[in-house]
Image (cartoon, rainbow, N blue to C red; front, side, top):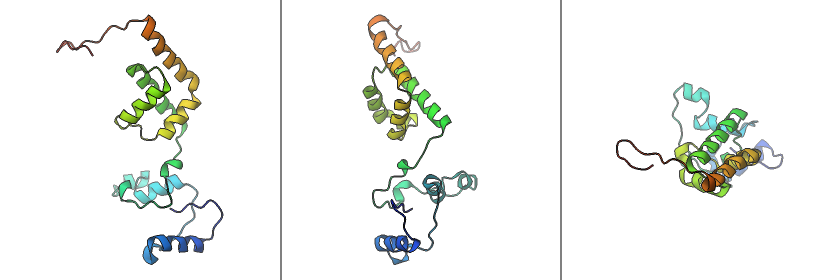
Length: 161
């Protein structure tokens, strides 16, 4: 994928790619509308490729030039944003986090375990729903002073969880 900031010709793109990757590197150039969908098509992560059981290329095997970052072009739909928001609120509640910095630290340490891979999406969801997040953080902060939670105890080991 080659993304230009300004209008370019197909031939100028062909020359730039050949300069960076070699003369034999370009066989076809196509102008597309969706960077995300094209990337998924090329890496075999598209719904069609998955249905056809095509080999998925590892992102680590792909040569990125000019600081290309696919995450800049991936857009979450409303349902995905809602799911991420609910996941984050659940983490806040379960981990008893009292501010956004604690949440971001937790996501950096344990995000992958929870299916969160893109901090940009996390930041977008938090800022778009700051009032709701503030309620959860406030509640956890207040509970630290006014409410004693009953400790959870593992019935088999007697360990306090």
